[in-house]
Image (cartoon, rainbow, N blue to C red; front, side):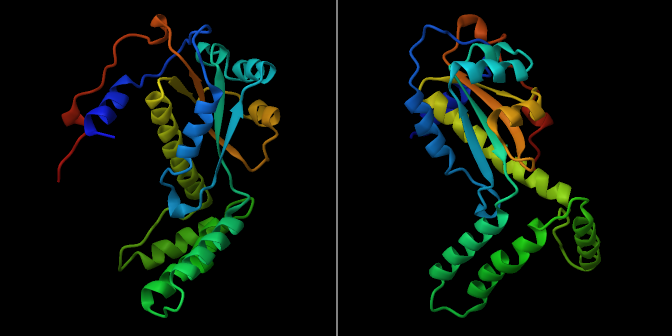
Length: 240
């Protein structure tokens, strides 16, 4: 893809609040976009996410209701729920450790040992949390202690891990929206929803956390609410 075509995708992507019910829509294109989405960057390559496609009319109507009746949900051809998972960190860590073990097979240097230790020791230490977050508080105190004399990662509590997971899922959602725009479709990310009812509708685990719901379709003329406006670049882009 050329630079100009990517710029075109970025400029054409808008949050669309109303879709054209008569426009042609191919659900296979959503599947392809989601396959590209799985290639998104994510923390430690743990891939702690799930993408739930809602296609049936019955479930779409229910999900639209749980999205507070937003037009972006009610008029969509398909809705995709982006979910951060927490139950599978052990399996993912073991999988990554095995990948590292194969990649560094026959090597006994510092880099190989450090990479393996990362998934076998550090990741379990950070992701293994109790209901009340006590382990996270202990990690926080330990991080503070080590950080007195040297640089140290300080975001190690249970809530910090939660933020980390949602960051990764948000990156995936952005990849998906750009991929859909490249195929000529429009999207709208939504954070206004009843998470409890959405989880029940999709049969999600209690530990799952919904990052956002993204609606998909083809925009109508009134689907975009006005011209895009942003604050001045110099107010947010800083050079040091």
